[in-house]
Image 1 (cartoon, rainbow, N blue to C red):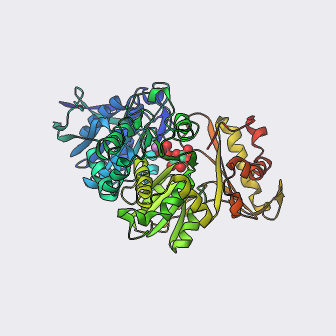
Image 2: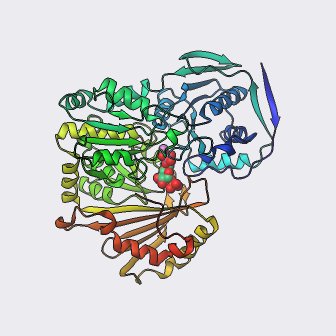
Image 3: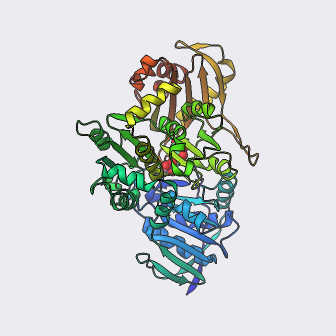
Length: 543
Ligand code: VG1
Ligand code: CO
């Protein structure tokens, strides 16, 4: 067997975003594109010689081909071992768990997460480091730098490796171990949650519906919810991962998981509904007739943590991304624990979790997780909720009503303007940035600006600083608007507008969020001139 050295040249735009490198699948399929990026990754981390790497993906189109390339290049680089999920499948949290459990040096996750898949959809590559978490900015900067100076890559010349059967083989000097993608993850969930209590809940007639959206959580949810915990057969729907996710958009929110919403708002709705995204790190929680906003879910999880086995001793601290609503802060204050505010993206939670400063973290984009791995974890959040309901014998609606009564309600919504002209979007942000200093004290569409700044984060653990993480505006009376450009899109720019208003009047806890936020929405428009500048009359997606 030979190692081929292929000459190549830098390809523009291989800059990792919020969560790895994401591009159109066809871009990833152009000659050298994937190979360049993987070689740059090896170069950026000081080579893979003698290292152990985890490999898996969410099953989207090109996952299988890309996995073969990764294995050939890891072998050519002299890796000691590649541990790969059967058929090259692993959810993101399962990959994070395997990196930690097997003491691997890092891992490659093949996924564009919540972005649609298929040959005309999106593909992505994420590199995770030895703690199991996404590569921090210092590492992604080195990888990006390596993409700009690459001249060659090394790849083993070989037939495809059989990834369909569990077992071990070798390629050059690299051991290839194919593992069950679900087993280790399931074992971890059994350690964290009270499986007998959940089993008893299901046996009592509690009905659940989990929508895997034709993506990676299907096998995990079927094994755990149905086969182990005894949820009725068929509780997990869209359970077989498909290369194009059934032409769907595997993003668990009321828009893309509309079927689930319809089921949960029907007369004969199950007691609990949930969904996850392409790579299994996001979650959506729905009760009978009630959708739980991710920011509220995070706050409720933190408030109820001591009802769950692994968290019974209390939380060391909590953390949320900056645009996530401040509902979590209320809970942290009541518990007397620290609440950290980080930039968008899970990589910023890693240090806090490693240092034992935070136990539970979350983002408004439907990501919640804890120190059990170093990624957000969709099924973990679902099991967490069900465990709490089993323990407290309460419905989702009653739990949220109680929560708002105790802490007040942070009405919250995100308005996304997708695939807008990149130059116009950048100008919108730049112009607003230019006004920041003059805004405090002024009144815009009835809201008086208290503070306006561009968020920068100083990591309290390693002292690193991340700038340019979103424009934020707070208003007298507890309103807040945040604007930032997405770092995961693959077409033009996506403008995200995050809207929040605190309500403490007990009589106003059950309003429609869009109505409750109407004044703040009007202020956002007056502030940023979104309609004029983007040519859009309304957001593409409201969550
Ligand atoms: C989005 C979300 C962010 C999340 C990221 C990755 O990033 O806003 O909260 O961490 O996706 O999630 P952006 O830059 O597009 O706003 V996943 O599940 O797509 O890996
Ligand atoms: Co994801």
